[in-house]
Length: 415
Image (cartoon, rainbow, N blue to C red):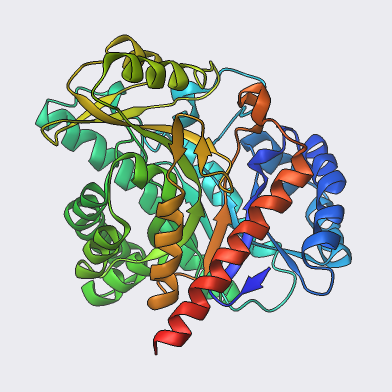
């Protein structure tokens, strides 16, 4: 749907189905009732998630044409895709395998190029935006000798060279279709790119110099033209949950990007879990047990602890943090995408305020026109939080729409 702050939709990674027929069936069940409830008289925007298998199946025969027809008949459009999870994402143990295959592999390149070809083919009418696809933060840092500078340089060089093959594809697609589509890297806890500083440093130290040489060789571009093409086609996916887990303030992230002349392709609207620990032992243990209630075996739930001294201590997964709980910990934040319309979970809270702040900044000075709700954990939430899926998606989108409207109105009144 289109709002005063840009396009708003939800990511279909919430629906199971790694084969196209299964996933399409899930969309056909959920989307028509959502469309009728949310935007009966206007188009509904979608963030499509396709596994590698589903993307290959969709690209075959007449399936793209059939999907285009269904989108038109249903009154929907695809303005973004989620190209981060390559394989199984529901009903299997995902954990760090969500990064496989990573950007060191040709499989990741082929998958992403296929998604962009499909995204271009799925544009069913005039858009006021240039579609984008979010992707992994290059790789998972614990697979490498992170303390070895040469090893870090090698993996950044290899992943960047592979990613530039996608940039080549995007430049060609822009010439063919007029669509300046963008690949949006999604920093997340323990990703090769985890923070705003790391994204900026990678873009400046690797992507720009390597990309200028690459595009000069491929298309004869000048350094200035290549730099603009790289900024146009490679952007940041601002996942609110991920930056909140790392205690990064939204205004600081945007200031760093602006200083480096880098762009945000889309906002993924999501919330993490957090809690501040009291001084007394009993209260601290109660909060630790509350976090333990969210310990489930499917996805990674990294924890970043803030100590009494203000230092950040990172844990690979929630079980590690639970086992190494320390009296020095003042606050925990955990990478668990909880429903965004709920602020309090008993002794725990969500990082919902970060969503409000990001949308306030978007209203103040727009930095993207794409917003995608991404809560994919409904199947693994504690029993008391599991709700009807269609009702839950409706509640999330309506909650965002209300925050968007309030943010836009507050900005209008301040002018």
